[in-house]
Image 1 (tube, protein in one colour):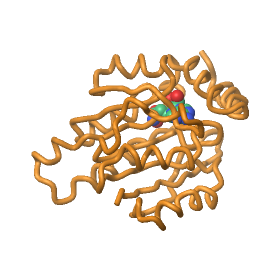
Image 2 (image 1 turned 45 degrees about the horizontal axis):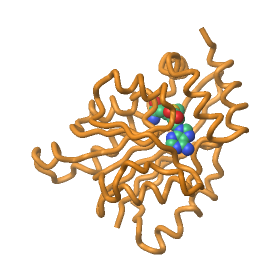
Image 3 (image 1 turned 180 degrees about the horizontal axis):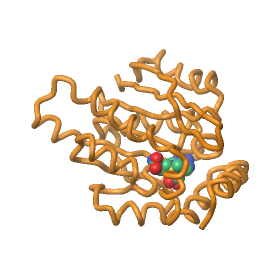
Length: 223
Ligand SMILES: C[S@@+](CC[C@H](N)C(=O)[O-])C[C@H]1O[C@@H](n2cnc3c(N)ncnc32)[C@H](O)[C@@H]1O
């Protein structure tokens, strides 16, 4: 059984090598991933963010409208965030992720309508190619906008593409990414009115070995 320290150490080394190594890392830890999360008091942010997405998307909606909302769990991994999305009230939840072994576990949970394979990155072959433009009313992305996994500048075009006009995005940006650079990556979307900013909140991320880390939760709307 891998300790959290060993997992963290291996992750730190994988992320120095970039996305492919990170995806391989997650594939190799697919079976242990959720246990390791639980040991870090790490996961409150997934639950919190799913609740935030539900709140911002369902304000003044009828029960029928709520039941028809389709959301995407970006970087769904083993489906933990998808479970939170279901628990808060979403009926139609799809996922997407590049790590096939993580996705295998997610599929067994039978919470996702569909899971798309792909990754966010700088190359033309990157992206979730099986998702048509303007598909989702909302999306959640937790645990992926972090050093070595997905860059904010590579995620934003895909977020904008897959959301419907008026759709909401809630995503968590790790403190391992420079917060000013993350904000700057957003500016052209705000300036060109492709995205509107609802809030950016600093939130607790995890406490482990008496070290507390934080993150920023972005809530945006596609215009
Ligand atoms: C920490 S897990 C988060 C899984 C799930 N959202 C959760 O919070 O439990 C990170 C996930 O991001 C995926 N990932 C890493 N790099 C990615 C990229 N460039 N694009 C999309 N997903 C990526 C990994 O395969 C992994 O499943």
